[in-house]
Image (cartoon, rainbow, N blue to C red; front, side, top):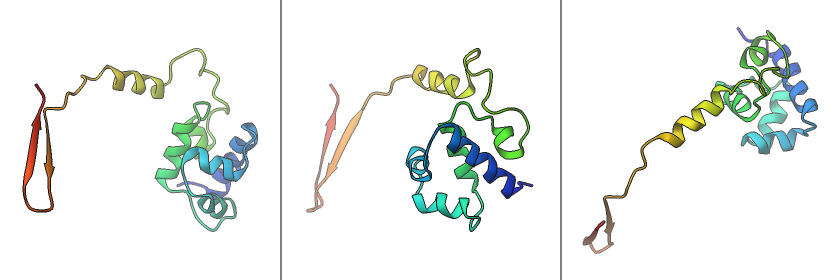
Length: 118
């Protein structure tokens, strides 16, 4: 089970390490500023989505450290080995390029027009 008090302490460590205000942090991970305020003041608990956004935004954060305090912060192996996040990004780029086959436009009078790539 997640110890919210310890989690918030580690979250504040991330903000201090990156010299971010709570507003800048919220903007960076694409959450509402009020969400960060509620978290930091203990009114709300972090959601899984919030935790994953923090993990995705900061390569130096180890998920085990963020959740349970195990390991170190910042991660030491960032510069030496590619992270899973970088590997996922490379894999996504290697995916087969998709081409548009057809576009269909529907009009308010019930008719439509279909455009096919030549």
